[in-house]
Amino acid sequence: MDFAPTDEQLEIERAVQSICKRFDDDYWRTKDRDGGFPHDFHAAFAEAGWLGIAMPAEYGGAGLGITEAAILMRTISASGAGMSGASAIHMNIFGLHPVVINGTPEQKARWLPPLIAGRSKACFGVTEPNTGLNTLRLKTRAVRRGDRYVVDGQKVWISTAQVADKILLLARTADPDPAAPSRGLSLFYTDLDRTKVEVREIDKHGRKAVDSNQLFIDGLEIPVEDRIGEEGRGFEYILHGMNPERVLIAAEAVGLGRVALQRAARYATERIVFDRPIGKNQGVQHPMAERWIELEAADLLTMRAAWLYDQGKPCGAEANAAKYFAGEAGFKACETAVLTHGGMGYSREYHVERYLREAMLTRIAPISPQLILSFIAEKVLGQPKSY
Image (tube, rainbow, N blue to C red; front, side):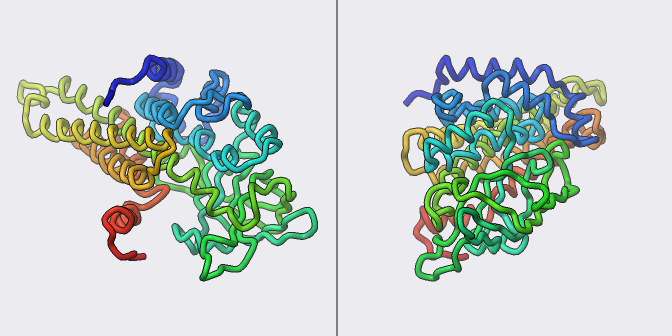
């Protein structure tokens, strides 16, 4: 059992840190205040070749694993970019895994190189207003008419749809079948035609740099050649992206918690009250120490889930557990950072209030902590299904 990162993994971390240094605290504070997608940040990672870190080499990717992708995302988040920076390239890393696994050679050659090179941006269109995490009940409909599908419906919480030119879309092509509930949904990767899709941005709690949206789809035409795999098996295909996404969110939560804890430790050393640094008090020391322990445990769980995925082994429980534990650990670290700063923690000057707002995202997306606990209870502990 070897816990040491490889030389290649250490080089990834150093290279990513070097890029992130060009985008300092003021950059992200401005993005958090004013919004606007960080195109220059995205372009920097495209130019350096990192957008295809887990994509096949024959299409311009690096051909590395989710372990390396997790290191990439953890490093971005820990740089101070937080979820604003991580989410700007998040979709590139995991989003088209269903294409990598189930796409035809022609589809891969057509779709992957532009995404890897940064010429194309994609969004992930699954969640709907009235179904939430009950994906099998999606209502957005794709009706085949000759060599095209015509799609009508709604999607919600679709990140980067303001700037995306492509959408990975899950839609219903057949009525639900109680005997085969996962059948009837099909997966498409196609142009986001704004003459047929109205995109409305959602004003939200944090991460203003990366937009979240409602989509109103009215007569979107999708060529048959933009369907991934067989009709009716789309839900099965998106499962290839779910476990990597949970691992990456966990890594981002660890990185966010680490930068928050670093800020707290520095402030506790510098802040003098009653003629002594506040970090000399155990009431300040101990919460920070607890957060460090939790973040280290979360990182180990995350890296194990990533390793299992890269080895082709089952990792559903581990990936979900990593996302749950890292989300909680990251949030608690950000909360402790704000409290360590006292009143100044509520000020934008010290950045930790932004980290706390962004940390909430890692707890609730892309799956709630309650549903993860239900999944673990059922799949690992053998309890009856509760949902």
